[in-house]
Length: 191
Length: 438
Image (cartoon, rainbow over all chains, first blue to last red; front, side, top):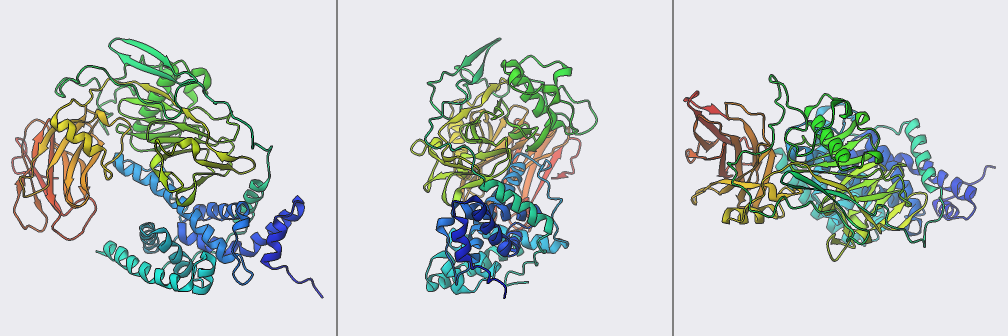
């Protein structure tokens, strides 16, 4: 009979072990277990492979550094990791937008930042993603977090609430308001 | 597709999975513990070149100088000359045709020999910025602290130069180029934490990370996390416990963590080498000047390292039917306006001036609660008018002052193109009396 895989709780505890080999092995297992989900979320929040890769690495590094703050949802760290990914993606977005803003502010020159690695094949998809990310940037932190978890990562609402450490009723209220705000923001762009 | 109709993400490529894991594991490796040590100031002096008439004096800030970004020196203590006095700047390199002037034209510093200038990059604005940075470093006596200037290459240049731009050189150090000055960071290689924060101006920082480690600066929602070797940041992008950076929340107290070692605060903000390399008139103390000062400080206005360089040259008087605007210049380098935006309040926007032409050219479009357009108005421009593209309300005249024309209307129409295409501006000249659509 094979060994039962350790759950996230146990791996997380092992990741904090003083023995470096033990902690590295445990965290590597956690990484492989959740990397795909974090990558997909990161890609949807950045729109580029390069941005998604940066966010993927940053998420797990931040998670390791803040490992005492982890919240498990049904013994899984994934919902919490996705909240960390959202924060990292926001930094990545601000970084990319900042260069574009400076270029626009001083005149119609080429923005040096290279977007040639964007892999969204269709121009419409890329425009849509960019518009959604811009709209997200216009939301409050509280609203943005619930949108990222429930509408982008498509976590069940109870899991998202647990990951954010808020009551479900609060989450539902924020989702409702965020949807209305997003509708207004995205509708303005459509005009 | 999901509720937001986002396209599906591609699967995680194996090489990306492995590469990201290596990054994570490297970042988890502890370095020599750094807590509990007092760090001495890293750079104890910054050279500031003051321009005074025909002489050049070098001022060195002492160790006891207040921490924080080195301020630019004032241009002079005398009132600024009126803007019709010939500016000392050479025009920007033209886009095509006539040969470009030397990249450091207009500088009060002795130009570097061609052999010491960075090699051409193919972009005149980048070349001009690189040349100014190199000249400032050499003429301020800091050449030995940098690689030979002839070997410098731009690895990032955000902006077109002229008004303000941020130049990264060889992914090693940063140079902030403004109309009247240049600020150059060091290389940051001796930073004990692995990351060095450099004050380039009161609003602009450079974070140097020569080893490319992941660091996090600040806390909470506005924490900045990066691995780039050179990053330009505005102080407005950072916060300390929810409070903006300022006198009560100094930059030195910002949390800083660097993977593989340091966790603490910034502790020291190193001053950049700041050189005022162009003699430009400062704004005089007039009613228009005071109004422009207030506008430039407004929350919606563009930020400039030395806002005092913007000199008012005229007004668009809305006369109650349209918002007003103050037209301003920085010599032959840049032009802008402060628009009395009904939605956001007085808002300043500026842009580099195009190469001189005998035909009016667009400089800047503004779109907010009002729509506005700034164009050049060369000699021979007799009239400029603006109307809404919808055709309602008729046309009215734009203000012409000092070779510029400003047109402002209330944005009564539907939201449209952010370049302000909802308005139609027509310039009439002696050569084109039938009008040139702008």
